[in-house]
Length: 238
Image (tube, rainbow, N blue to C red; front, side, top):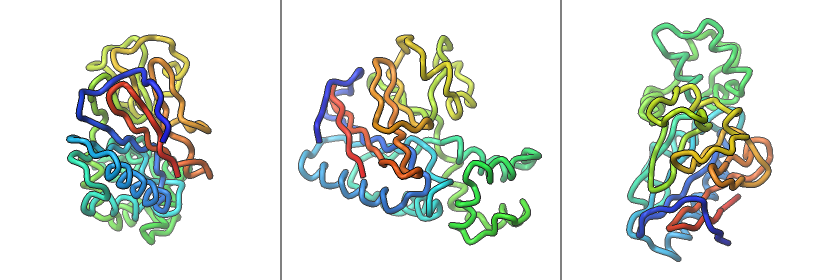
């Protein structure tokens, strides 16, 4: 793994493995976990965090297996495990709310939700009540527990990005889950370097104010893990 200077830094003795949008790609995720475990054996560190940037589900072959993997004992020997909420998880959870959006199921299916239903053995044309009844409570509970953001050192980890010019404690949750512009083209020096996914790119994108780690695994691209330590960054991919 080649490393380069990062736009941010972490406290000494800490390392973060941040995994981009998985989107149901369980085989790639398992291979990436193996790479992370091997890296930890080669280079032990007092405090390691494994972080998922959101969008575990939809589009790819086995979303149910991805969530089940994260509910199992940690796949790599880290002290901390963080899974952020992505917009795709938010769409699924909205369907399970007491008053789901009127077009919520149709919108979710149009955005890859049918692949997730298939991974649970639920027909894509099933009515909403049947969909909700057959989604495992443990999986829904896990996703409801996922935070919208995580801060460590000079980094802010969110799924999609932030609204430029808005203080971090005043950000709209919808922007953290969905924003693209004006975030992606902003030259603003944000309060923290934003590590995000949501917008697929061919290779990890390293800017002075943000780092994108969604490299389109579900579209035939890489599944990427950013390895952050001190003032350096490297990438593991499969």
